[in-house]
Image 1 (cartoon, rainbow, N blue to C red):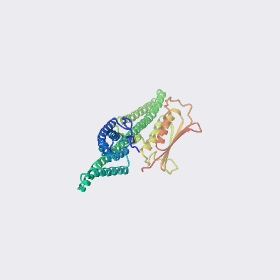
Image 2 (image 1 turned 135 degrees about the vertical axis):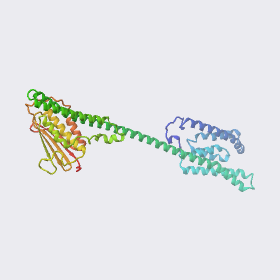
Image 3 (image 1 turned 180 degrees about the vertical axis):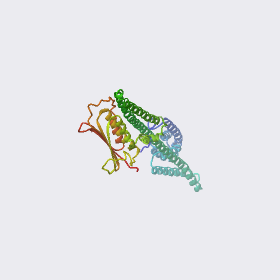
Image 4 (image 1 turned 45 degrees about the vertical axis):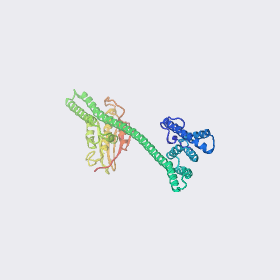
Length: 430
C-alpha cells in the first residue's frame, strides 16, 4: 500500500517522481545519504559479529539506509525495513524518521499503532539482550534502560508525526474552506452585478415609459390645439385665444412633469442593496391617480374629442356619480398604471382616430379595477393631426399591466374602431 503526496492534491506540484516539491526530494535524498552512511558504518560491526566480510556488511548497511529515500512513497515498507534490521543494531535514524513519516501520512491509525508497537518491542528486546551480558547482576537496571531506549526511539517520532499530520490536514481543510468561500463570494459578486444590471435596465425602462406618457399625451394635445388654433385664428379670435391658453397650460404641465422626473434622476442614488429591490417600483407615490381621470378626460374634450366617461362602483349597475376615484383607495402603483393606460389610449385616439367618438369605462370591482377605452370608426371628414407614432404605446401599456399581474387586451372592434382593455388586481386600502 502506498501513500503519496498526490493524495493531498497536486496544486503547485513541481517535484520529480512522487515528490510534490523539489525541496522535499532534496531533503529525502539528503536524509537517505546520511542514513546510508550510518548503516554502512554499523554494517562493519554487524559483519564482524556475523562472521561475514566487512565489504558485505558495508554494502548491506548502505542499501538498508538508502531505503529512507522511499519514505514518502512507501512509509510502511521503510518502517518494516527498520524493524527487520533492529537485531543488527543499525538504522537508528532510519527507524526514527520512518516512524515519523508513517504517523504523519494518511496511513490508517491502527496500522501506525501496530507498527509502532512492533518497533518498540524489537528495540526493547535487542537492548535487553545486548545490555544483559554486561550487567547480569542488575536486571532492574537492564529492564529500565531497555524500556527507556525503546520508548525514546519510538514514542517521540510517532507523537510528533501525528501532530504534523493533524496540522497539515487542518491547514488543507482551512485552505479548501477559504477556496470555497472565495468561489462563493465571486458567485455572489456576479449575482449582485447581474441584479444591479437588471435593476438599471428596469429603471431605464420605467423612465422611458414615464417620458413617453408625459411627452406623448401632453404634446399630442398641444399639437391638436395648435391645429385648431391655426384653423380658427382668423374666423373666431375668442376661440383662438382660448385654444392658445390651453396650449400654454398643457405646455407648462408637460414641463412641470418633465422637471419633476429629471429631479428624481438627479437625486442622490440609493444604496446598491436597495436599488435591486426598490428601483423598478420607484416613483409611484408622486404619480397621477384615478382621482385625476376626470381632468384627463376633460383635456381631451377641450381638444375637440367627443369623450364619454362611464365609472361604475363595486356591486353597482349604474354609473358612479361621485367620480372616477371617489370612495375607493388603491395602491399607488395600481392607480398610476390605470391612469397611464387611459392616458395612452386617449393619446392613440388623438393620433389615429381624429373625430371618432370615444368611451372611457372604469369599473371598481371586488379585488380589482378594470378600465376600457373604445373609439368608434374614424370620421373621414376630420383633419389628420399628423402626429408621429413611436410604436411603443401599446407595448408600454402591456408591460405596465403585466408587471402588476393584470390582464391586457387590445385590438380592433367589429364596427371598425379600436378597443383597449385592462384589468388590474388590487387590495382596497379603505
